[in-house]
Structures are given as C-alpha cells and as structure tokens.
Amino acid sequence: MRVAREPLLHFTLLGAMIFGADAVLHPPAKEEKVITVTKAMRQSFIDNFDEDKLRTPSDEQLSKMIESWVASEILYREGKSLGVDRGDEMIRDRVAFKMQLMIFDQIRVPQPTEEQLGQWFAENHARFDEPERVSFYITPPTDQATAQRQFEDIVQEHESEELQQQTRAVLARPVASLAASFGEDFRDTLLAMQQGQWKVLRSNDGWHVARLDSRHQGKLASLDQVRDEAARIWHTEETRKLAWEAVKRLKTSYQVRYEQ
Image (tube, rainbow, N blue to C red; front, top):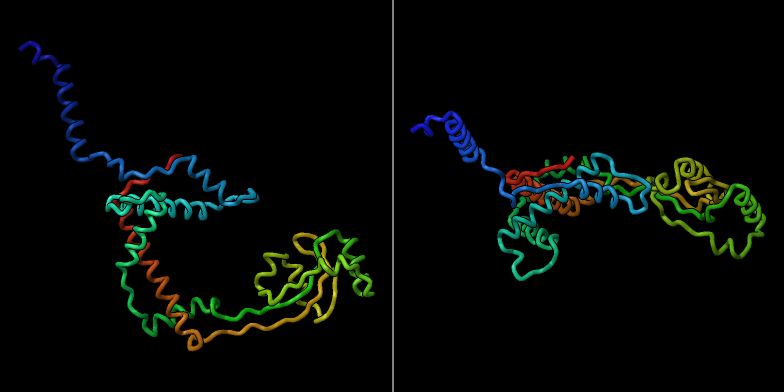
C-alpha cells in the first residue's frame, strides 16, 4: 500500500500511458515507407551532373534529379511488393522499369479533340517548324595571328595541304544552335557574310577562317501537314503525364527525408 502511494510510481505510470497513447495515435512510419535522400546521395547527383566538373546543377535541376530518383525508388519498392522482381536479379532500375510499364499499360488516353490538338500545336509548333540552316567551311581553332596568315594563304590560294585537310564542312546547321557551339559574335558575323566569302572569325574556342557556303530560310509548319505526328506526340506526352501523376499518388504513402 505504501508503495502504491509513492508519487514517483504514479508519475512513471502516467508517463507510460502518455507515450503509449501517442504511439497508437501517431505510429512511426514503417521503414519500407521511408525514403532518405542522404547528403552523400545529393553530392553524387552534383558530381555526376557534369563529368568535366565545369559547372554544377542549379537548385531546380538538382531538385528534378532528386525527384526523379525518389520516383524511381518508389516504383522499385512498389514493384517489389507486387513480386515483379521474383526470379530477376537485375538492379533496382530494372524493377522500377517493370513497374513503370505496368502503370503505362493501365493508362488509356483518348484521341485528342480538334481543340486540344490545336491548342497543343500552337504551344509546340516550333518542334515541327523547319529551322533556318547554314552550311559553311571552317578551319581548326588557333590564335588570331595564325588565323590571319591562314586567311591570306586561302585568299591567295596558297594554303597548305594540311590546312585543306583540316578544314571541315559544317552542313545544314540550324542557325539557332550556332550561338551555343560557337558564340553569338561568331553567329552574327557568319550570317552577315556574303555567300562564298572567307573571313577571320572568333568563336568560343579560338580564331578560325570561315566561309559561308549556303543559307536556307526556315519554314513554319501547319497543323494539317503534321497532324498525325502531332497527335502521336500529344498522346505520348499525355500518357507520361498521367503516369507521373500515378507515381505522385504512390508517393503520398511514403515519407521522404532530406538530410541537411
């Protein structure tokens, strides 16, 4: 009786009751439903973003890589719970891919209405337009003085056989891709040249001698010309969107932890 009246015992029993009730009302997440994105994993995404380590991913790019990995992990675990990995010792991506196929197989996307396809084409017509293209000859990158000597030799038709062999032809290159590869100044100067004209140009890699060979204007596509292809791409993208929504619904039953 004296022991039963001890305050410490009452406090201990009360504490046990509180913790017991909390465990029932807020059970811990099952370990198989917890996905942890570790610091080491985040760093591996950053390291693998650019093998040459010349640039690092932006916050948005890193977030997308992590979200893609989390989705793959969810598909792997869900697929494994359904037994799709039985008898298959391939890596986790193989199991996730099987689960992905199962999701895609269950999705049914109807043919787009004329309004849906028209609106989608208006937003994506650039994917079907014929871009403006240029063809040109270009010597290997070097310093400005060497490029100037090469230019004089080419104009006087005294260039060496080695330079002739090193000069390459760039054929039907989309104008929109020139700046990324050669630089904006190179692009602007090349497009301002007359056809057949040689000139010393500076690119992102150095100095060249280049000659504009031909230039073809782009052509806008119409929906009637590419209707079948547009409908096929629309259907593929809608299927992927619905599949991703299915993955996100699966994700709601998981707890994703991010180590700081």
